[in-house]
Image 1 (cartoon, rainbow, N blue to C red):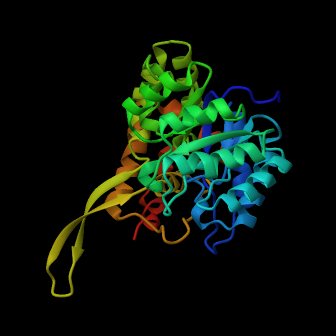
Image 2 (image 1 turned 30 degrees about the vertical axis):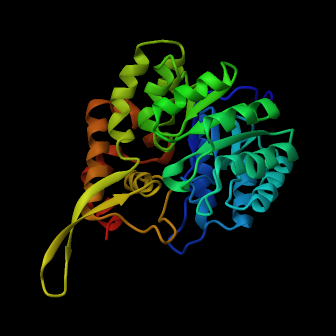
Length: 351
């Protein structure tokens, strides 16, 4: 492929498939990547939030980068997740990604230790960009998980200081912030959506003009999401129609349900459980017969109510727009109708 110059299209935030014994399912991982590349995905993003990067050791991180590049066979771009709350670790991971042949690296803002925006610019994003001028460095802004955020102003300064910082993954949900970002970075800078459900609005809104998405649900529907992005970029109203058809899937990236707790004395209480990415998409993939396997602890399983929400979303898509899920049948040798209707595929996926 030609050298990556612009970030656009649909990029899949790959799940990390595990076996029941906790080992990595490399055969399943290869199948998933072939499914992605055969459906025209623009890029692959291993070892991000969706790939359960907090529970992967750095040897595993590096191996996933290597395997993704190998399995993708230059049919799409690869942006390796190399972010950390330690700049030293991020530099080491980025060094490996550069040597392995990745096209870009994704750097999540430093979680838990919570540096200021100024420190993020000078001691983290800027440090990595300066150390590796040959690779594209993409800041990943997600304060809901990291507890901190690189400001639009510091992002704009970074983009002027380093030519290899020319895109951002925006997962703040703050449209005013995104408009401010566009005003400061100009038109030659790429904004990628980090939220499936907001992608269409971010792309269609004149003040933001996002150029694509790093998607969770394209693990399941790469062709349809890629088409939604392409149509929207072209100003085609079909993009909005596809957004509507995909909406049930976008709505289950995170699943909130009220579940019942029973105390030892028999009293009962309702508690809101928030099942966050990647648990819902892995639950969906397992239910549909795709390689995903369990999550690593502390992530576990959903409640029965949560699994019903995921299953019903898939049923809605299958009933109204079966072409979205149909490619899974050919790629994995399954029957979607059977998988959706038989309880045995779903009962084992909850506590």
